[in-house]
Each structure stands twice: as structure tokens, then as C-alpha cells.
Picture 1 (cartoon, rainbow, N blue to C red):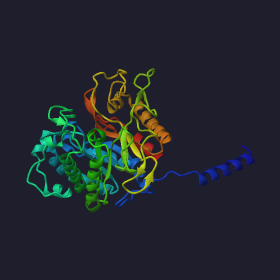
Picture 2 (picture 1 turned 60 degrees about the horizontal axis):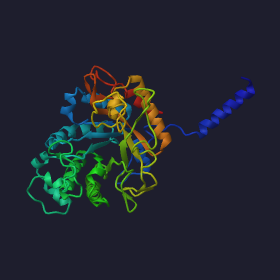
Picture 3 (picture 1 turned 180 degrees about the vertical axis):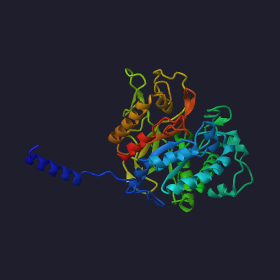
Picture 4 (picture 1 turned 135 degrees about the horizontal axis):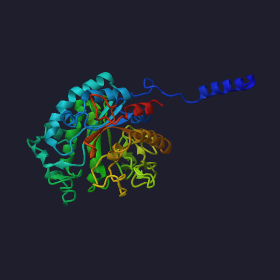
Length: 410
């Protein structure tokens, strides 16, 4: 290279270094909020979100051969800032008090190594007759300006009066109706317990199937308004972030958004001439890409499209794994089972692809990385997906840990 070309190359390099945006280190990213959250800070959190299902279900984690210590190491190593679905029950409501006790010391441990981390609990679209065994504390009634009563929750009072959703999941396990006061009391009870433990986010699952009696969403707004009022006094940073799956693109009434951010499964389409391969597409099924509704957020700022997460979801087994059967199945699997059944190299490649595709396709969309999730279709004898690097502690790890870390460091 002659001197003229060398000089020109140096000048261009200097100019590019001066004007191109530089990568922002973890220390420089803003994670501060108090009482409300800005769009920038919210997106910083969503960009470092990982689904870590049942992180605090310690007894269950042991049953599927997990390692609590290694899970905490994993979260610290990748630089996670938002831990999705870390505690919940799918039915089995009498286990909640035990889960709360198990969660308390682990939450403190997490916030010791990173006080900025947001930990999310979940309350899903299911109630069972076990709620009949749980006393209603006085503070639940008081949260709804009601006179306290000495009684337990009432399963039948949470259900749709016309019978829809009854026994939807199994016998005595139904879809609750949010227009019923008893349902709102139950959701408030679980959510407030999360806040008291140090959780700062709650996911509400398939919100729309619990909302069929209320076209203006009055009762969901009522519930979350009361919950946010409680959080404004008692939460770690005086607020709670609420989200749910919104196939419609979001819930907005009089220009006001119900949720702080949206969420939906990825909705992966098969590549017919490449068995096992999947791609993302705008407009495929009910995917949320480019159609997250906007409005005024609970924090007060306006947006034309609310930031959202997409996740590798789990919902069950079709019994036809490996076959292209269409609908919401990807090669016959739910999303996380499909992902876990792919070769390791393709799993790592696919995460890089999905991250880049989402960021390019919709700037308010973020991939919630897979960390821990149940497998409806086991891989061999492995019934749980962990992204952890395989080790003596986690010999069944799926080895996406360093890939996630490297994606986030770009």
C-alpha cells in the first residue's frame, strides 16, 4: 500500500471510530428506575432478558437434576438483567407458601451480586380446587376497599358463569374469569406476595382468554391499578412491571396501555426443504412482529409500538415430534422442545440468527434468551432444557451459555 492510500485509510479509520456508535458496556448501560421506568431503561432490561423457568422452585429443580449454584453462576456469567418466569405454579396452588419460603434466600443472594436484576414471577390462566384450601388474608380484602372476612378462596367463584373454560386443563382445573371479583382477589394475593419477596415483574400468561366477559378490560385495569398502587409503596424500586401474552397485539383502552411491555411466543415456521430448520416471519400465525400496539404506558410516556419480548415457549406435546404438522407446532414440537432437539451447532447459530432478525425487523422487539424450560418432548431421557455449559454439576446442559453471552456483548 503506497503512502497516499495508507494516509487515506488512516483518516477513514479515525473518522469511523469517531462517528460510529460504540458498543455500550454493561457498566455504562442505564438500569436505574424508581416509581416509573423510561423507554430506554425498559429496553435495556428487555435486551438482557432470559427465561429461567422455576429458578426458585428448588425442590422441583432438584427433581430434574438442576443445580441452583450453577444456575446462579450461569446468570451472573451471561450478564442477565431480567429473569423471566422464575417462579410460578401451574395449578398446585397449595405449594405456593413453600415456594415463597424457598425463594426468599435465593432472591437475596441474586441481589447481592447484582442489585439491578429484575426477577419476574408469573400467575397463569389456571385455577384449581386447591385454592379452596388457602385462607384470604385481611390485606387482600383491604386492597379492594372491602371489609375483611374470615374465609378461604372460592374456586367456583373464579370461573366463567356460562361454563366456558371449565375443566379446560383437566378436571377441577379451569380458566379463571377476570370479571369475577374472586379472581381478582386471587391474582392480587399471589402478585403482592411476589412483590413482598423482592420480585419486580409479574407475567400473566394468556391474558385474553381470561377476559371474555369484559370488552373494555375494566377488571384487568382495576386489578393492575390496585397492584401498582401497592407496588408504589412496597416494591424494591416502587413499581412492578406487568406483561402477558397478547396475540391481539396488546390491550389498549382510551389510549392507555394495560401492560408495561408485551410478550408472545416466537412463532417459528418450518423450512420444508430443510428438515428440522425454522425461520421467523412477519405475519406468520399470530406473531407480534411489527404489530405491538402503542399508547400511553403505565409510566406515562407515549409510544407508537410498545417494546416486547418473544420467547421459546412451551405448551405440550403433539405426539408427532419431527413431523411438519403445521399450526403452532414447529416440526411437531412446541418451541423449546424443537430447539432442544436441534444439534448444538444449529442451536447456537439459530440464536444468533433470531437475535439479529428481530432487531432488524422490529426495533422494539427483543429475544428473551432460553435459560431454563420444561421439555414436553424429552431429548433422550432429558426432560428439562438448561442453557448452562455442560459440566460436572450440569452434565445435561445444552451449551448455549457462551453463545448468549457473546450475543449480548456485541
